[in-house]
Length: 230
Image (tube, rainbow, N blue to C red; front, side):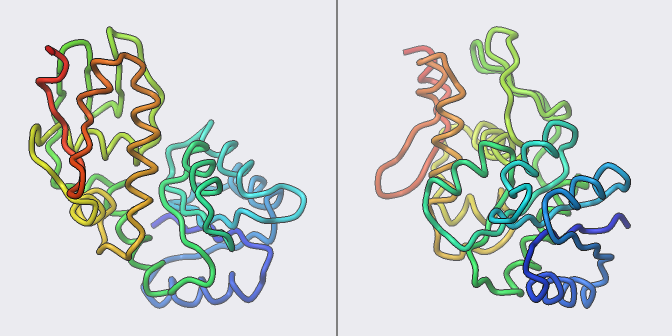
């Protein structure tokens, strides 16, 4: 089993997270700042990163960006602030999930387990390509393209789009999407789903393709393949 790297300038937080993860049988490594984290990442293979955003020398945003340029490893970001800007920027740089301090260690462990299950391929989503007009979604390659032009997607953005497209015209609540795509129970922050949907729409530049990802007001979201023909 590859280790989990916990990156936080607060020693107390690192040790607390390490203790709970080791109780679950995970091997854990620590880094006290972004520079140390990137140096360790270059030398060792990790299964998942837990990254604090606000750190000296090199902050968590730069760590996410640098790691994502080289790897699809799952990343959970930690932040003392819950503003939308922090979450959106973290997701743009490739983070898969986030928790706001102070956080529940039980919740953190649940999210770690869920991300590792999905990164290792333990998912109920079928491995097949989907084609809707100019939009092609290739599950095995984790690739999205419009008219054969590839669009960069983070792992979580891809899984959300693929799941909705795999179940066309079916409406899913935010709670259902959190449970199915994120892999754990809904913890009361629907904005996580909303933020990912917003980023996906921004990347689907073709208006007809973008319109397939539809909001059902008061309920949730659905993928409407008929929209491309309207």
